[in-house]
Length: 181
Image (cartoon, rainbow, N blue to C red; front, top):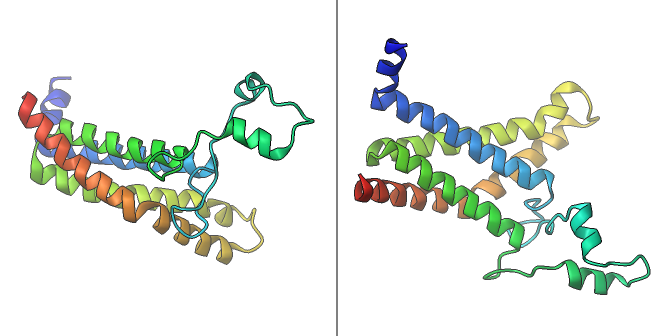
């Protein structure tokens, strides 16, 4: 037990393990958003699904089967915040929070930046792999189409905004670690 604690005290190993966890959490948050329909891109972040409502919450809104679709949508719609749909806003805040917390744990700027780059690539790879997995198992008749769609979705979801949020969260986490250490 003493040997394990001694190895985990090494800042390089703890930064590497934090980066792996960071990448897995980024992939998990992204896959949750994709499978709930919140991050399904049409072309950019302007598209995608709406907020997924659970059946008990749906029943509490008093939506009757006889209501028109427009009235039901008005009751379900939370509305965009700063022009971003609510589900995507939650995804962006999760990416930012993960980055801040992981960088706070690492508490070194160079290691945090390297960990961010590694975790970003690992998260994108895990999302891509999870999306093409049905093609490997033979469930899908056209695995080439699935691969192209997975590449498109992974790039569109991970590139513009989450890249900058992760990078900014890395800075913020290191600044907070220096402030509170």
